[in-house]
Image (cartoon, rainbow, N blue to C red; front, side, top):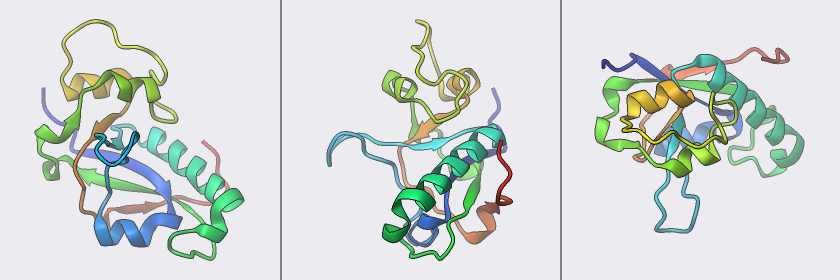
Length: 150
């Protein structure tokens, strides 16, 4: 199987400055030593949905605590060329699918018993986890229009 050329990650502008400084960092679910992941998808619409959800939440609830002190919180999507991502960094664990991305095809479902590689997992669920930091620049940012729901 060949890799898709681009994977996407949706978030809000609230975190843009820190992401540009340190990269997309794996989110650690269960304490300092837990294995975490960055949620990536091959479907732009999934990343867009998550970005709009994050921006709405940050604007309504956490704007005062916004990491970058943004005046207006906006949804954005990072487009990540897969040639930056060594295959060894992808997460192949059942718990990732149970937690699931906000709009993944199989979020909240369990996986059938079969052998998985990260690409087949991506095709089944709409998203995969990546457990290493991902360096990004402003060239990787796709700003989404405001006020258009998906």
